[in-house]
Each structure stands twice: as C-alpha cells, then as structure tokens.
Image (cartoon, rainbow, N blue to C red; front, side):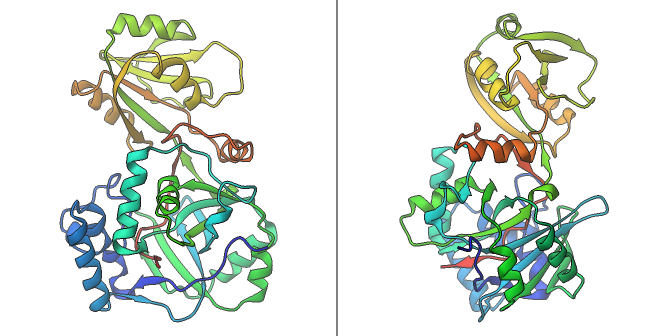
Length: 361
C-alpha cells in the first residue's frame, strides 16, 4: 500500500509563478495590487461567478497549464534559519480518519461550507493539504540529494521564504521510500478536507507531507469578548489558576501557563491541576467555556503581543490569551488516539503557497 501517489499538476508558467501563487492573504501584508492578479483574486473575491470566470481566463491565456505526465512534486521551503522538504502527491480520501490518514482538529461548519463552495466552483484544489509523516532517514537523504539539482520554481514569496519545487517522474527508488510511510497526519487543511468529503464528489486530494522533525508550530492565540465584568472573570479564573500580574508577556511561555491581557494589564496564569491535557484544551474547558464568550477571534503567532493588546484596547474585545505552542509530537499523539483538539489550535509556519501546485478534477 502506498499513501501518496503521483498526479498531473495544474501550475503557473515559470515567469508568472510569483504573482499567480500566494501565501495566506489573511495573515500577510499583501498589497492591493496583488489582489487583482492570480489566485489571490480568486481567494479574496466574494463573488463565485467572477472567480470562476477569472480562473477560466487564466487557463485560456495559458498562465496556468496542466502537466501531461503523472509526477511527484518535491517542495522545499527555506530561509536562513529554517528548511523543510516535503513530498507533494495525491491521497485516497476514503483513507482519511482511519489508521493511515489522520486529522487532529475540530472544524467550523460555516468554514467547511465556504471551502466546499470554493472548491466546487472551479473544480480545483488550489493548494495542497499540509501534512506530516514520521521522519525516515533514508527518505530524508534521498530528498536532500534530489534538491541539489535545478528546480522548476525558485523564488522568494511575500511570506519572505524561498519556495522551490522539483518534479520526479517514474522513479522507483522514491516510490519504494514513500511506501515506507505508514501514516500521514493532517496538520493544516481540515476545513478543506471536510469540504471535499461533503462535496460527495470523487476527489483524490493533494497533500504535501513533511517529515515531522522539520515542522514548526507557532502559538495560536485568542482575543475574546465576554459579557462578564473583569472581577467576575478573575474570580472564575482563580478557581483553577494562580494569577500573577506581569509587566509584559514577551517572555517565553511554558506549558501549563497562559498570558492574559485585560484592562491594560498583562497577567500570567498558571494552571493548578496536574494533568496531561493540552494547554489549548485547558483554556477552552477551564476559562472560555465559563466566561460567557460573545465573540472570539483567532490570532496566529505571526502577530506579536502588541497586536493582541491593541485588539483589546480597541474595545472590540476585552480579553486576550497568549499560549505556548503545541509541539508536533503532541499533535501526532492526539491523532493516533482518534481525539481532536479545538478548532484553530495549531498554526504551522511556514506553509506551501496556494496556486503553485494545484489539482484540477
């Protein structure tokens, strides 16, 4: 059994790849000039009819072209401090959530429906699902040697990372090494996966699978609007946490601790009970589920502490919580047990671009 299979990608012309592909528009400062071009125009448009029309025009103008041979695509993301090399290929959707392809996060129904409509509108998966597999030394050595050759794409995107891609066609050595991957852990893309499942269309999605020891996870923080006053909130939190005022929250947060901003003051919260629950689970069960949350927003660790503070000071929210990042080993353990973390528990960074390697079905 082989979990990851080759396919014919839909991809941009080499000299157009920088503008046609895009990092997540929500989390990067992308100028409006880029939103008028490429997949960003499709992702940011609220009009499905216009998105489809523009997508068809990109194909008609041959800005994006489908490969004529099944290939594996090797995807490297790097900067001076970090590097990760992944295998990009198709999976069988029927194997999702069994013993071989595992998720770890709950999803929002509204977001799943949005993803389903977006995918069905253009009959294309714009970018791969981000996933992990347990590190394999032989596969790692093979890929490390392979990426010494000339890539088909190599450019620094708006996320400030270098994105490079190689194609591999009919390589039995690579296929044998991929066959040794017994489990794939979905990291980012649960809403897209559920959207494809609920579409009831026969889709074999594309994933990019990285060795687990190369993956970086940032904190995924919360800003909250509660209907309770500050004293009521502190009273509830004090039942399960030791509360301490701090000057700022820029120090490294340890497991079992949260930093909270409220009423122009940062606090350190230390969970009093000794258990093995993940911090994000503790936050939801012991605080968020008890303080009558009216509104919540999820802020990736790409945004600093001042961003959280400013969100609260704007009066749109009255609380901010900064968490310790969950590590990849914990994510894999949760998935192996068929358990699920709350939505937006993990922020994986860096990520592959949308629209660089896509799948038309």
